Length: 260
Ligand SMILES: NC(=O)c1ccc[n+]([C@@H]2O[C@H](COP(=O)([O-])OP(=O)(O)OC[C@H]3O[C@@H](n4cnc5c(N)ncnc54)[C@H](O)[C@@H]3O)[C@@H](O)[C@H]2O)c1
Image (cartoon, rainbow, N blue to C red; front, side, top):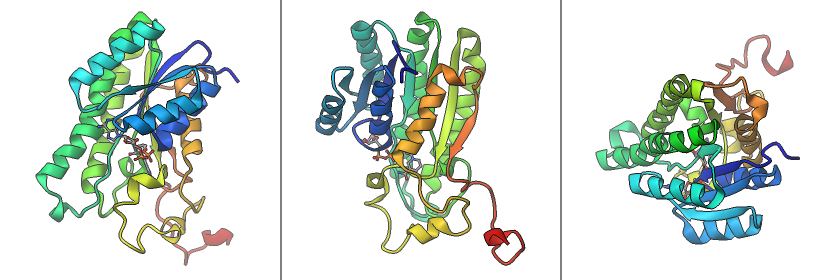
């Protein structure tokens, strides 16, 4: 397939998980891909596995100077930037009462400021390329509330606002901006945080139309659609890839439950 033929893409948080799956899919679709992350060894390995069309770049998304350098290098090496996927994020699980200001600020710096810096850095090169597509990775926690994720969810809701404003400002430059909202991704993100017994498959399953977490390849498929010209009329939108988890409340005792 060649849905990204001749395109140059930058994917943040691409050393592993959803970002790595996205970079792999982009390369398979004909793109040249820059994988950016702070996990340099793993990022370099992932890029090497993908092959000649991929390269690794150290980029801490919360650093303004890292963004300037990264975008400059992409343009110098590949001549253009067509697609940016703002995927990098960190998780912090705690009740609001137990969330320190330091942890709050850290999440905002990476998950929210990092996306702002990325969108801003991509504008000039995308204008020079005659347009582009920016995909911001939010979460089901950017569509709903959930106990234990107050700081994380706040950053993920913020991306949907930034996406709309950016779509309004950049539409006439041919730059589309969208958000994807997955329920699922890499297990490595949540693994260190989840208390024993919580967030089990059954927690996810109860009442959900598709009763499981999403796989990274399923999220990457939606990102590809939004990155490619197949989504040429889509901008400013939030797209769930959540197995219907954000549909609403499921009352098992009422008609309509379990197919009854
Ligand atoms: N894992 C899930 O269940 C889940 C659910 C919904 C949404 N998401 C979202 O999907 C996206 C991808 O997450 P994932 O599931 O692949 O998790 P992950 O933890 O495997 O991937 C996140 C990547 O971001 C990188 N990263 C962290 N801080 C960074 C920084 N300052 N600069 C650059 N890179 C940095 C990490 O090193 C890692 O490679 C994130 O935006 C996440 O919030 C994940």
